[in-house]
Amino acid sequence: MDSKELRRVMGHFATGVTIVTTRDASGTPFGLTANAFASLSLDPPLALVCVDKGASCYSCFAGSGHFAVNVLAEHQEEVSRRFATKSASKFDGLSWRASERGLALIDGAIGHIECKIVYSYDGGDHTIYVGEVLHATVAEDGKPLLFYKGKYHKLPE
Ligand SMILES: Cc1cc2nc3c(=O)[nH]c(=O)nc-3n(C[C@H](O)[C@H](O)[C@H](O)COP(=O)(O)O)c2cc1C
Image (cartoon, rainbow, N blue to C red; front, side, top):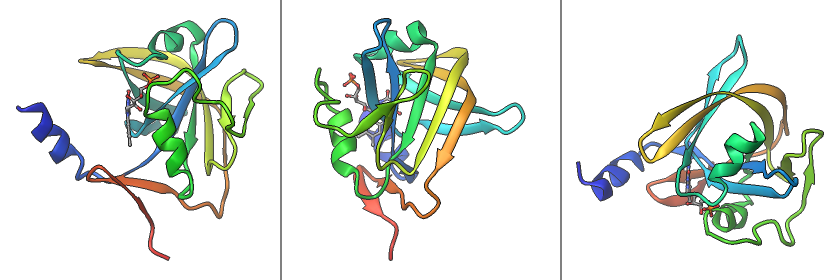
């Protein structure tokens, strides 16, 4: 299967957009834009995210053993673009706070889900991290940023 065609076909599956964050041993935050995120189980509470083995923050996931998922709001396209571009300064000028576990929670996101990694599986050029959900909050009236066919979208008014 041609990878460009595979990407084009998979792009027809509409998703939300998240920033998945983790940290290194010194507490420095790292993060990347991810739509390969899924709710996996309610009992026990599990969620999964797929992380590219080539991502700059890749090694931090195994090191910290935790990740946080920030579900982006419709006005956060710039945040998504920023975290989808390789840079050492993704957090500069961004409004965020560290959770009790030291994970970056981005202000304005409509959902924050903190997880402890309990399983990891090889997924080709990605690793599938399954996290036990430790804490989750949501902004009840928030509207999500969407991604479909390689473009950002909003829900209709
Ligand atoms: C909408 C969107 C969804 C993405 N989803 C994922 C994903 O689920 N997993 C992933 O590893 N990279 C994903 N990426 C690509 C990464 O965000 C991008 O390669 C990022 O720069 C990697 O992190 P790094 O800059 O720290 O290397 C996505 C990019 C976009 C724009």
